[in-house]
Image (tube, rainbow, N blue to C red):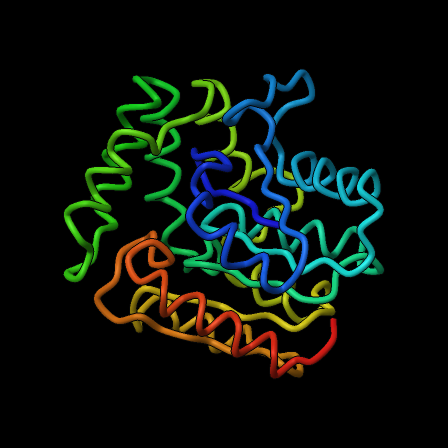
Amino acid sequence: MLIHGWPCDSRDWADLVGPLQDHGRVVSVDLRGHGGSDASSQGYALTTLSGDVVQLLRHLHVNHAVMVGHSAGSEVALMAAALEPQRVSAAIVVDPAYGFASEDRVRIAQVSHELAAGDPSAVALGYFRALDGERTPAAVTQAHAGRVVNSLPEAITAVFHDFAFGPGSFHFRPETDRFHEDSRRIPLLAFYRNEARAAGGHAFAVKPGDRVIIYPGSGHWLHHEDSARFLSDVSSWLCDLGPV
């Protein structure tokens, strides 16, 4: 099950759906307020969006899911797995939006204020431009500049704030550490764009089968920047795990 990040939609996975079908059925979702999904009357808390994913798993009668999340979608993927552990066998996260240091709270709160006070789409685009790496192809940057903001303005603002500071959040350490230690029961493959972001990832690799992979110099969408390598690494890990 493929879960996009903030503030994208299921089209972010379009080029990877076909190759991933070698491993089984592939489902790609639009979270509330994103892509083709409606606005939410119940807010955009992490537990709310993760609950939607759980309901989808039940509706589709999925009993052995591998959750794949990018950025904030990683938080949704892991929370859904924690809420419905009997239906999820493993998880893959791509540059996950968790594990930030406590001192990052002020910076994240400032961005949240800018989103609420200004044009959420413009603020989001500016936020992502700063996440390109030295190896990020210009084509990837241009593609996301045109399509990255595929969410309702209210969802852009609310998801950013609620995932960081709302109920169930594990955006910052030490909450991230506790979540991986106490709430995550499945093996995890984590991709990071640089050593600095991966430092926490190594600390969170606390379960059998956990693996951390770094693509130095990559940007936030590293699964697009080197999709062939990404698919190879995913396939290798899944094969090593055996039947899930």
